[in-house]
Length: 165
Image 1 (cartoon, rainbow, N blue to C red):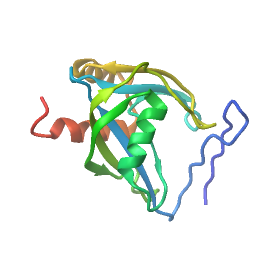
Image 2: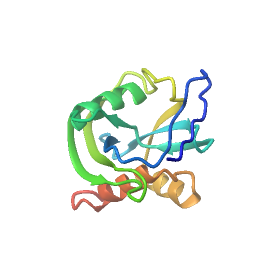
Image 3: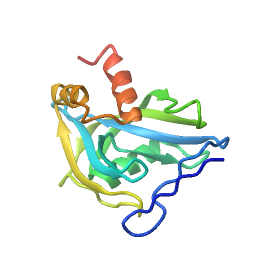
């Protein structure tokens, strides 16, 4: 078994990447406001030593409810509350190495008093939360500013919906 255990700024183990046979679940949240802008977070990812621009996301406890976890992640990472939340798809981010599925969750009817992380785990380093227009997201993808696999896959699922422009 291969292990990579980088350290976060608080000296905790930031993440563990490995070949694994244990199934895991995650959620990626596409939070869309009334102007079709999508919430993205900027955070440092220690295993690759890079800052990413990505959708709010997180792990779901085995047997946990992805909708409830999506609501929690959205509030914790962005300060946004969603009136309506639903699963629109599922991706397997790295099926050759990890038994993980990521439910893609669409959240709308949004409200917030201040954008920004409300709570972070010891291995999270969210530095910015903003709402991005679809054209700005497409430009960020084309320029390489967005390169996170679950974010790219989730946006593809969202933009493939018949109701989305």
